[in-house]
Image 1 (cartoon, protein in one colour):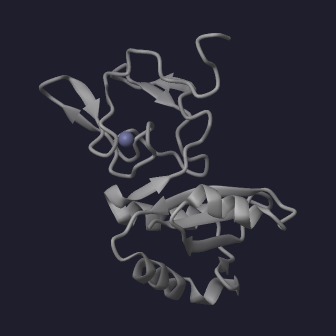
Image 2 (cartoon, rainbow, N blue to C red):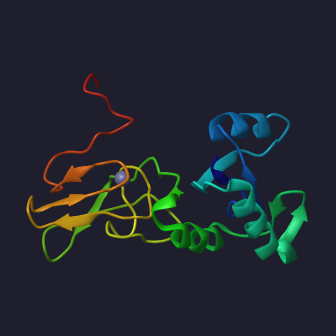
Image 3 (cartoon, rainbow, N blue to C red):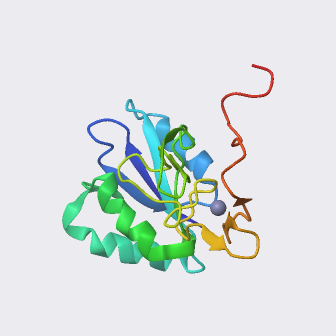
Length: 168
Ligand SMILES: [Zn+2]
């Protein structure tokens, strides 16, 4: 089961709850019930030993504990844990992740990105699945590849956009 990071989406998305859930979406809805503040999933870590991962995180954050599994930390403090988990770490994708903000020297588009609290490059974080394995450049295909979600792209095609279907 994944270890999730869910923050109260106000006051800089803090405090943040660190917990384990089989279905993060359902857990988030359950937590939302009875919480007047909008909750927001920041990211998660998949782990074979989830309760140990959770316990380790709780211990490392012990001095920041607010109550129960809630900690007085900011999203920028969650990121290192996700990065540390590598291909097991995921950031919850920003809805506008594929908005192009510019082009680099090699004409590779730069996107708004998946994580609004830090600028993550394509090789650090896959913009398709949010995995911190990042995308690797494949010489053979001359495209970028994600080992986690199998996305393969040279960034020349328009991206699947969750919000604007072909009908609108
Ligand atoms: Zn991916």
